[in-house]
Length: 430
Image 1 (cartoon, helix red, strand yellow):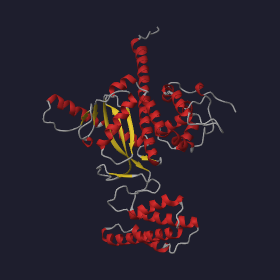
Image 2 (cartoon, rainbow, N blue to C red):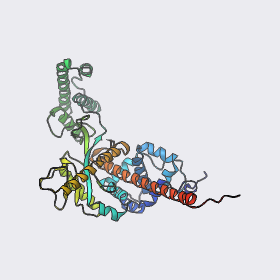
Image 3 (cartoon, rainbow, N blue to C red):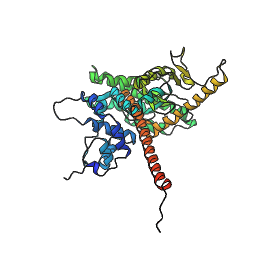
Image 4 (cartoon, rainbow, N blue to C red):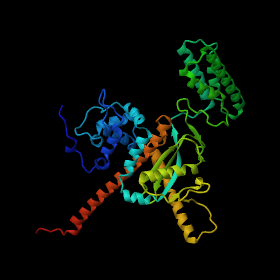
């Protein structure tokens, strides 16, 4: 087959071509090369899979759709280090999962640091003295956890385990469960609330009977089923006001987080924290919080990450009222909307100006959610929460850098047109 050189027909001033030149691919290859051995089949090229991982996040694509786009787009292939135009997938889409698990949170932080290093390092180090920080909820890809749904899943899991082990349960309550589910489906009206509670209690009692029957017949319990049966027991015994409740069987780390939103009282996922510079608006810190802790307790680890990535010293942190830290942080001025009795008019106006500028992070978070795959996290586990948060922040910085480069090119074109057509007099031939 005839091979076509990519550089022979692509625009070298395209945003992806310019971005490919700025990223330090050699550093990433050196860091990730130790994760692969030299035995058996050859591994995937580091630049290829890292490039597609970034493009997937920048253009809001899935693992399969980014592979299709790679076959269609010559700029995607050039960004991933290809010399000739390719007509087949460079690897299977499932290899994304293995690569993310292999490099982990530490590897993703190195990729995120590359996005920060795209900008002037000295400028970033100076701007990191004053950062804005806020938290948001990264929702997990689960259905809304209702008691009825969880109870039904307990019954399904018990029946599946019994069938797998060849156990015949005393009662399966198949017809009654089907009838109860039909009653609960249409019982949300106020006049039917009492019947709904009664029906739900009966469904829960049936699930507990099936679970106890399974435990009795499978005894002694095999080690491979202990964790799953423990989760089923937690679901059946948890109360409304309990902490560390189970909201999903396949994502047991999901937390119920209330952020005081009028349209959505609770969100199910994890809390993510972001910090970005006040002047240029570059994200210099991103991390996922594993626990549902108070915002003030997330500030110190977030600022430590900023100092580690930028090499600068944070002196001011502009936050909202939810970041009240008892005793403050040594060497850091926490700026938030508050009434101070002994404060001059000038200092009050400066503080109010900084607090107004902090509101810009709300638009940044909305952009991360709706354009950069932070709205719903499809990656599993707490490691997936951290990876998706860092990738979204890296994609934001890269899109910002490409936008600035495009503006520079347009400015040069306008300057050239201005010099040629306006400043240079046109000679009229007679």
